[in-house]
Length: 218
Length: 180
Image (cartoon, rainbow over all chains, first blue to last red; front, side, top):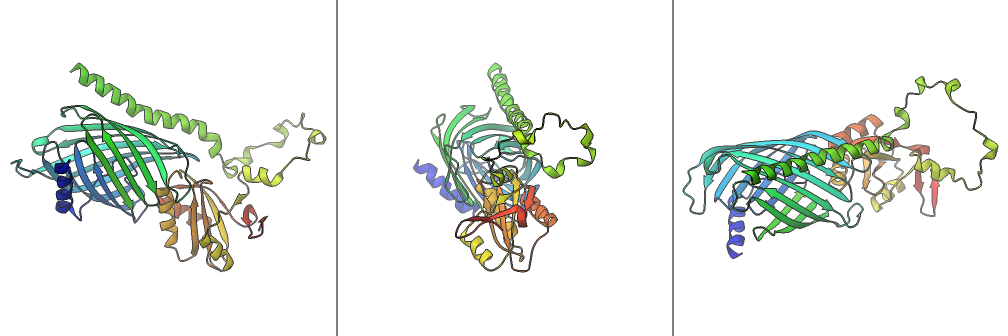
């Protein structure tokens, strides 16, 4: 655990001022809005900051540390809102995203810096009480060439909070990483949402690793 | 290999379930989303309508709450109140309420508050998740037309269902409730 905390601290130091990609919550904001995202799951830790150019496109910088493979990715990311479905009581979104940059070994991994790129898609559906999402991403480059992950999440809000209240969600995420020692991971988590801030804390019962996600919309 | 295929199939099913669920819900919501202005009145023929079973005298009107019916039908909506909204009303600003589709979380509220807060015509703004409305009070003597409000909501990432002003808007006074 101490190693994990030290690693997080070192990553934050290394990447301060950088940004990351969206996990499962609104990767495109309002026109002119900035969003800061931190994501830590059983495989990696990422920082992402993006700026929403228009309601369908955000551009940002992603720094991602793959803790399992000791590699670090840095590069810009674009996220495109392909389609948003509106209803009186629901919203659903389909996103595509892609990024390119450099990947290199860290923490004793001697892998040289090489070009890398990723591409993926996300979909979500949400009411004030129910949530479902899916995300898939493939990455090419460096020692993790050809890596693929996908994750699906479902959630339930035990109560409906009004504007500005503390919103609480109970969620379950199942991820699939074919290259991992445990290809399928199960992570129950709780999401707290208030105003412009979102915080998620969970625990991977597969790997005994924490999930810690934070998002702030400026 | 079989395990990998099984897992991929399982995730594929989950991936399909989200849009399928969305589509099913969208079908269910179609009637809720219908707006009066969307109906094609020019295609309606009075003589084609069946009035035969309509007996006005047989209706019981004594428990009929017209105001509640109008609010429920979307023709009369109530302005949500905050200290900022109250101050802007007290200063003499005109209110407007927009019913917005897709408002499900505080990020939606943040997006619209930020977008409208930048406009000099707007004195106060509040997004009410419970009523799914964007509540605006303009500076005295200023306003935004419906088209501009619709464009700004679109920039925030959402969509307007209807905009209410004047007589179509119910503003609760400090002493009670009344239409203004």
